[in-house]
Length: 166
Image (cartoon, rainbow, N blue to C red; front, top):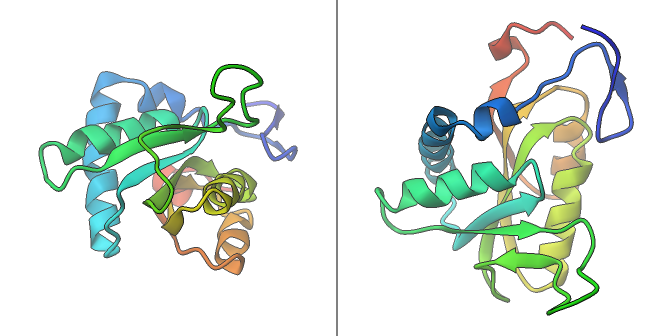
């Protein structure tokens, strides 16, 4: 325990390091399967999944890999925090194309701003956002923010599921 500054700028007495799971071999397998199952249970049929780097990346890649076992295939993309200033100067990397149907991926939702930024970037570039899938909802207003912008949010876990009391 301690005091942690979150990506949102808020401070918290606990920190959820999702990458310890999302970047482990077993975690990738489980999250890919659970994420794909949840996306399909929502009735979403995305062409691609992805979100703001770095938190969304392993989750999106795991879902894409899981889809190879359970067709149709869903590819992945990532959204840079800012567009590159060299090369192709893209902010969206991967298998995304204009007109793609996408599910925005997030690791931990606090305020919802990372997911909303990713949704805004891909929408502005011509994608259709079907919804947002998060690994964990901290229950600190992110759901209301995301849904307030017209996006459905589905979460695989809550703090209660992790045994954390906020």
